[in-house]
Length: 387
Ligand code: NZQ
Ligand code: ZN
Image 1 (cartoon, rainbow, N blue to C red):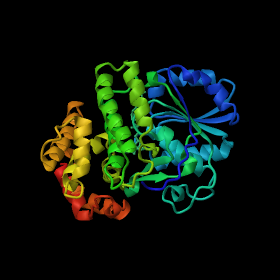
Image 2: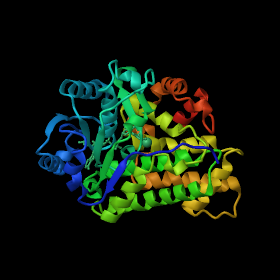
Image 3: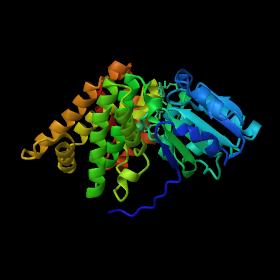
Image 4: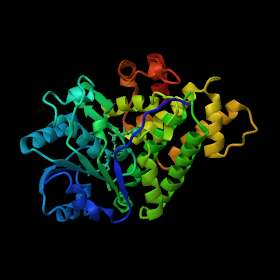
């Protein structure tokens, strides 16, 4: 078991109707709020009006139009400008992971004199941030409970995931009823994203029985509840469990004491989204089984056996590699069963930029240090197999 140093400062307020506590929660931060949101889903579901009504006593500035795979320019830059010009006390992010990630970059950028990109690329360390509160409306990223953010810069094909303790939201409101309207496509993609967060932490050199059990249960919970959410989008119990399982995803709690895996599928997917602006969870679902197949070896096979037996109930009295291959197939089939497009060409990606993307990943993601190391040639093979 590895040493660790763990603290989560985020307060989670979970359940139907909890947003009623918003005025009281916001009162500790000040009167000037920057309300951030995306392309309009929060207006369609009535949450925008609800927030405005609850916060009638506050001075509210707005940044709307934050896109999926949130963009540095204009969204982060515009948010930083609004915060600096108006001396904003607190950011209220209402929406999916993209809105929250963008708000995290704004929060530290607003307290930094230089180019906020320096903070995202670790050229400079943040020393302060505007506090962030969020109402998360999509179960997927776990951004509501973690210090990470992922920001895209279109002109350089960069999509950078970075971690900064200032990025922890102070308070996250999780009301599963706000996820009832999430489309089937985004529900399935959210499930695949959260499953991959667990898989990235499960496949490593050193884990514990406790972590393995927690993660295996997390994977089963996601698969069972995603199917229920797709069948009945207003199934409160399924949406609620899905939401909480997603929330744990990138917080580190699944892997306390485990060794680091390198998060290879995320390293690869970030390039796909950076070059082609695809949906993160779909990219992960496509890459995951191909990555699994590629790294299956004498060194890794025992983890696949445990995964196959405990998550998919595969008979353990078989050849190890047979079990591993069945587990990989079961992973693929599950994603396919929830209607995720399972080939890169299905999401508009052909072979024309595979070499370029593999090079970009090899230079930027450090995957030669992963549990199952990936060189540029491995990345070309995985991407080609995913076509
Ligand atoms: O923009 P609006 O109109 O709000 O619509 C959004 C968007 O089109 C819609 N949506 C959100 N809540 C809804 C809803 N539609 C109906 N009803 C609702 N209640 O869903 C679409 C996708 O939203 P987005 O925020 O992009 O999805 P998600 O939460 O999956 O976030 C994806 C982003 O998070 C990053 C990904 O790379 C990607 O950029 N990630 C962040 C992580 C983190 N901070 O820890 C970890 C993840 O691995 C991931 O990389
Ligand atoms: Zn992810």
